[in-house]
Length: 110
Image 1 (cartoon, one colour):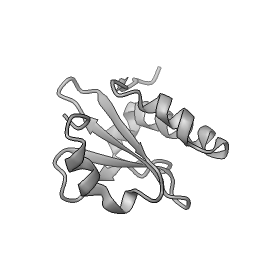
Image 2: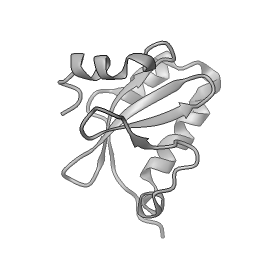
Image 3: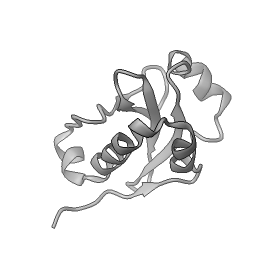
């Protein structure tokens, strides 16, 4: 049986995704969350659906693409407890101001 990496949603990110995301992207959200939980993806560092990668200029913050074309994204952190902490979902118009968003919401990114 495959190992599962735990996801922590302290900020209610999944709830916000459910409210904010258009209905056509909800199934992609669940595919991305499933990929983030898959320990094999973390071991091989291959994330074909979510394209998980570091945010340039922000310490420890990673970006996950819910949908690459539309621009819906999510920020996550790797915790000290070896689990992934979901921080927030970003609509397409906000992802260009990434560092400004992270610096203004430091409470979510700890």
